[in-house]
Each structure stands twice: as C-alpha cells, then as structure tokens.
Image (tube, helix red, strand yellow):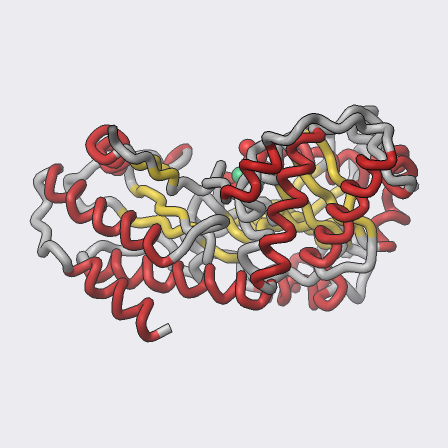
Length: 379
Ligand SMILES: *Cc1c(COP(=O)(O)O)cnc(C)c1O
C-alpha cells in the first residue's frame, strides 16, 4: 500500500465532513428539504463573496461560469479589456472571441502581472470597453493579480470588472461589495474543498442592469431565468444535488474556522512552501506577487519539469501539476489550497528533495524542510 496525496491546484482533497455529506441519500430538487439546503448554501456563498447581491449556483466546471459571464454581459461586437498573463487570462480572451466579442488584450509575460497603471491607461484610451476581465489567482503561473486596484479604476465608470476567482475563492479575500467588483466566477473543486461540477457566479446590481441589455445567444446559461428560479429557492434545471450537500458541509467548515483565519492559513502555507523551495536553491516562477493557492517552481537547469511531476506520481504516489502550454517542462506547481495544513507542505517538500535527488540533482537533504519549518514556526 502506498498512501496517496493530492497536491494539485484542483481538484483538491476533500475533508471527511464533505465526503460524508456526498454519501447521503439523494434529495429531490423540488422539495422543501432541498429549498432549505439551497438557501443555506446561497447564504454561505454570499458571505464568502462579501456581497449582499446575488450569487447563482450553476452546474458545470469553472469555465462554464466564465462563459456564462461573457454571454450574459456582452453583445456582439462589444469591446472588452482582458488582463492576460497566463493560461486562464488567455481563456477569457478565447471565450470572448468565440462569441464575436472584440478583445483588447493587456499582456504581461508569464510570471508577471499587469500593473494597475496600464489598466488605467487602457481605460482612458478605450472608454467604450464594456468590461475588464481578470483572473485573481492565475493558476498557471502562480501569480496573484491586483484585483482591488483594478476595481478602484473601474467602479467609478461604466466598465464592469469581471473576475475569475476559480482558484482564489476561499483562499484569499475578494470582497465584492467593499472593493466594487461587479462579477466573480468560481468553481467547486479548488478552495471550496468539493468535487468538480459546481460553478458560481456572483453579480452586482450594475452587472444585472447589463444582463438585461446583452444580446449574445444563451439558453442553458441564461442568468435572467436562473435568477428568478434561484430567488424562489430552486434551480431552473436539475442540479447536482449531492455536490450541493457537499458544498453545504464545506461552507460550514469555512464558517467554523472563520474566513480571516482561512485566508491567514493559506498565506502562511504559501509562505512556507516558497521558503522551502528557495531553501533547496530553486527559483519561484512568479516574479509578481505570488498566489497563496499554488507555488510555481522553475525546474532546475537540466531537469525537465514534466519528469519532476512524473517522479512525484510514480515514486511517491503524489499528484502535483506541471506547466501548461508553452510552460510545459519549464516549471512544476505545488498546490496548497482548500483542505490543507502544515504537514501537506512538509510532505510536498520532503518529496521534492527525494524527487530531485532521484533525478540526479544535488540535494542537501533537509534544507528545504528546515526553511519551511522555520517559516511555519515564525508565522
Ligand atoms: C481551474 C481554473 C479554472 C476553471 O477550470 P475548469 O476546469 O473549467 O473548472 C478557471 N480559472 C482558473 C484561474 C482556474 O484555476
């Protein structure tokens, strides 16, 4: 027997409380019992988003909620600004282009982010831009984007700020109402400690006003119809009821820990991971602010990042993630989001020492662990 560890940035491990909830008998979705569950989950999600507005629950992966945002907010021929510094920023642009929405891309090299000053200039140059699409935690590069600063630029004007928080919800704060963020999309399989399959979209009042005027085609993702159903305590179509029971349990765990402590835990584990990686003489891929969800590590010279990922899996039964797209082979990613604690970081780093040694890289055994342990003690 080899114990299995899941340390990838989604799906993430599930707490026992969530697993038990998932195993409960199914509820029918047109019953008062379901309505009570659904109301509780929607209330918990509102808290998590820091909004008194509407949070809709959708059946699909995070990308489904991204598409729902585009087709409900945009019209054919609209122009939008896309903050693009990784694979998920690129996905925003691809979705827009698929629907005939014109993309004005603000690009930064992988590992970097787009300074708020650049967005300010783009908004001055393109006051007609209908929305800014950004990614709070760019999971592909391990960079945290400056959503609060972006919101400070958009909230006074007509341009909406739409944020992909798939890997940051429940990991780092994104208080919609306080910051003035218009739309937040997320998925269940990352910081929310649930299986994949549920997505969320939260919309401000001014985003709803836009939904009324947007003319892109939509049926399954029609949020106007969905809003009316969810206000009555049900979903328009059959939801993954078991996943909602799991999400109810997960939101209960987040509430019991306290959101401020949830965010502190993630920041601390991320700090310790970075300290451990640097303690081994390896470099961080993120040059901008690193994400508290995932640490992208530059593969040392002569070592293929994919070989690191394979060795974690084959030699140690640990799933981590490699580089996406053009970054394949140049980096590997250690996740620390969701149901994670101090010793998940220790496992990831202890295995890293063994993996690197196994690949012929000189390793001072314990150097990564020593640095991480110190960081955990100090924090
Ligand atoms: C995981 C992820 C997504 C969504 O991916 P799905 O596979 O569709 O759930 C979107 N954005 C970011 C930043 C992610 O990390």
